Image 1 (tube, one colour):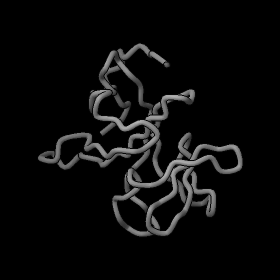
Image 2 (cartoon, helix red, strand yellow):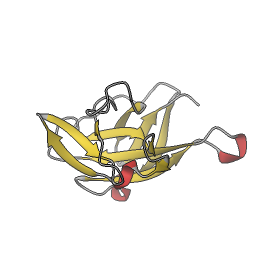
Image 3 (tube, helix red, strand yellow):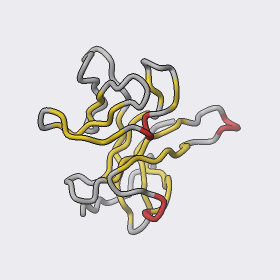
Image 4 (spheres, one colour):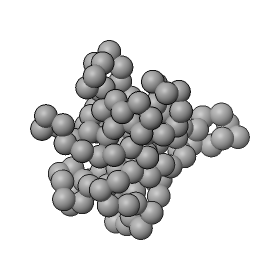
Length: 124
């Protein structure tokens, strides 16, 4: 398990470890909707991998829907990916690049455990 020093002010708590589902994705809202700076983030917890946490935008640019967190996690050509549940494009968990169309990329975010709290590095 990777532990990092959560000291930079951009690190924000997003959820608890108990909110995550092993080998799958969950969706979390980051930011303040009343300020108009919120984002839907897809979090993936892969406890047998290093790193074990990944965070991507939840918005699928192909289907125009917030569904990435519901995608299937799989290894494709040696790369950890999530397949969009609608049109099945694969996005690399490490950087959000689409394997079928490398001109399309989801934003990816640094994410880490701070004890049992999941924290994300995001500028809003």
